[in-house]
Amino acid sequence: MSDSTPAVEAEEHSSSGTPRNFGLIFAALMAAMLLSSLDQTIVSTALPTIVGELHGVEHMAWVTTAYILAATIAMPVYGRLGDLIGHKSLFLGGIGVFLVGSVVAGAAQDMTWLIIGRAVQGLGGGGLMITSQAIIADLVPPRQRAKYMAPIGAVFGLAAVAGPLLGGWFTDSIGWRWSFWINLPVGALALVVGAFALRLPRRAAEVAFDYLGFALMVAAVTCTVLVTTWGGTEYAWSDPLIIGMAVGGLLAWAVLFLSQSRATEPIIPLWLFRSRIFNIATLIGLLVVGIGMFAIIGYLPTYLQMVYGLSATESGLLLIPMVVGMMATALPSGRLMSSTGRYKIFPIAGTVCVSIAALLMSTLDTETSLVLVCVYVFLLGAGLGMTMQPLVLAVQNDFPGSDVGTATSANNFFREIGSTLGTAAVGSLFTHRLIDQLGDRLSADATRTVGDTQSLTPALVHSLPDKIQDAVVLAYQHALTPVFGYLVPVFALGLVLAFFLPEKKLADDHDHDHDTTPAAQPGETGPDNADASVPTGN
Image (cartoon, rainbow, N blue to C red; front, side):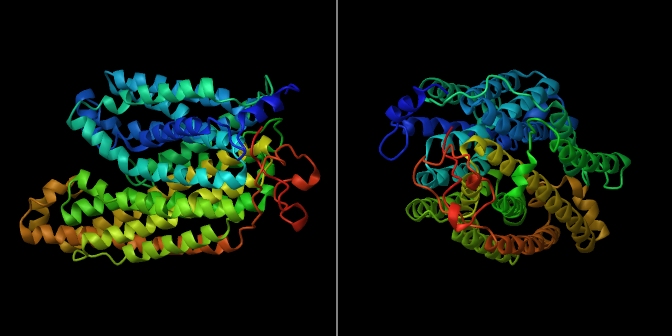
């Protein structure tokens, strides 16, 4: 960095430590993260129409899987490269790749090109999630950063709700292709703001990229995602293909971490795991957010449609209390973290709320009012609002600014793996319980009336004779609600871990950004260096 760089940065920052145009930059970063998050879910309600028009129902799952797979693979790469060469260029590049993928998907005339477009979108989208959070860490001191992290957490909850609603509305009105075209104007604005308003120092011009580690990570993540996506649905768990991919995935993970100890610039550096804060915060995020949040919001709409007879749109709207709950706790907790510099109490309180919400959801029955369901969903959101971003902030705060992207991406990467595993596990449990429940509750004559039980839709269920309809509704209720109860021990483990999460007080300035003394090493949380390792910029 040239000698003039600090002067430029000082001129661009206000007295609070943030750039004077940070509001504009933050809006662009939020827009980029929202686009990336929305595209995980926006096609879910449009899929039946898409595959019908493109004649590819047998490839339906790949429309979603291609995006998630590519985004998960991209996360640690963007995080590590961003720390090595700078986050701005990767942020702009990620938007560019995402927009190219959106054009390919929106213009696709067959399923092959649609899936290719979705994969390209994922390669860009995974980077947007990581580089946006890393850029905020570059520009904002930890104390002030806590206030800005709260809306980031709400973005993920909002996307989970708004994605299916937008996809359904586009499909029913102006066409499903607008699920992709809408990305172009919003992404272009974020690109322009990032290019002209965002000023970050450059780093190394070239790096020794870990090609072996990348290849092993691709193999490990691909096997993990495909085993959890296909197992028990496309193929039986005992199918040789699933067993082979599971074994191959385990081997790839083992060899990946072995290779990372020898790589010059590893994608997932092993020194990350020397930090107790990183290990515990990442585990809590994997259990509570990755497994818990995505498992519940993934299957609750199905329950609402089947048991209450709601439309897809109505069931999606009933998840809005979760977003309200997230904002209701994330914003005040962010202000408190900014004023006190303390964060540990929030994951503890948040995990308690999430555990109570899951326990209450396990008591749902066919007589439970929708108002009460909304209360439980609100409580879930309130817990997540106190959990998601404080964990990310704790991880960032335990590493110097030069490593904040790597730490943030690894934290998000393992949370994404957790969401994949959790959603698959809950789905498998639910499916097996549902098959058993339908078998127990439907007579042979009723089974013939229902037809293929694997092709049940809400409309079909609520068109059945009352007696058979009641049996199917009870089967869904008894199949899913106990699964929510099974998540309570998972959340309880997260609560125990939250009590063991070390707390390193957040600094209120950029003074320690470039601290390279031994006291600033990650994982050291003694009183002598309570504020020594604070990543706030490059």
